[in-house]
Length: 133
Length: 389
Image (cartoon, chains in turn brown, orange):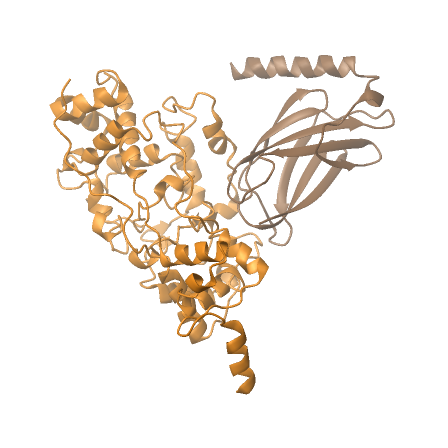
């Protein structure tokens, strides 16, 4: 059942990729924290909006290619605490929703302090630091 | 001397005999995050009888029923003794035989995400099944537990009322139901409010006079706890625990080997038929199982144990996963003198020796003691009337 759902999801993502080949120029990012490189723009937001220590949350990610670039199918998300030199106790699951749109679950920051989100989209790696109290 | 006296006068502005340290805004915010108490709680979505009065009654009966063990000599309350803050006061638990780990208190267990020192349980109901089947604890079996409920008119009647159907034929389904009723009862075991909670709430409403009623030694200890001690890195929130796992340098050698802690716990979790990815999870949308699906097994988990709540810590000696530290002063000394070289944490740089003075150690103990409930939050239960179909 899960495998069938994944197949359908992959098909939907592939179809939307075909349909938006020329849509990068019109690709609009939803509200959220915006980050960019020369080849890609992303926005992300968490649900709930305020991350609490020890409470699970979801990250919604949107990506738009720039200057004719594409978006890699390989999307990996993670976070770590640079000062503590450790990451999360969970591996995030990334669920593609449509071309350049992802929902990821399994997030939990187990300590207060500075956490760094890592958005790894193929060759593009974007990071963003947040302080959790 | 004059300088010290002036500083004392500056920092203590409340009435005679009562003193209040001048906590900074950052300190005050950190203190407020440890409340309010009791913290909000919602029913466990993986247990459809969580919060049900009928399930709580059945769970309470089962909790005190020695027949869950074929020996007839061990009940849940053997290790989780009500008048000992629902633990046993022993270094390591003893059911039918010795075990390697300290019995944790059940107070406030409803706020936890993982259960047991190694987190091998991902729900309170799954965790409640574990000791029934564990040979050294209650030594029971799936079939024996199911037969007990089927064969006892009172239990079977209550089981039917709780789950809305006759006791099922499948033994494993019955055992899952036993676990869920036991969990419903344990969810009611809540710590009462402590002197710290009164202080915290007084700070929140800016009632300096009331806040100054909190012992000065506890205030100084609290300042160490949230500041230099960095204790709040793991002991977060109203329950004083982040619900996760850390290596704190407590030896994990046991007779004949090592206690691998969280590392083994994750493996046991994945092998458990009662985990949240299995057939007995009542959560239809599956959100409760995300943690179980996504938990990462890392080398650093070896020797990690769960961060316990600190509420009522003064009533739950001895301490640590193996009960190796007898008093709160011993625990404070452990962290004060911790040897980072003994930590098994792949470079995690959180614990460092605090090198506390004798006075500072005493203050930290005074703070921990102030987390003791002033009065129990539990109301005495009346014996329930016999069950009628």
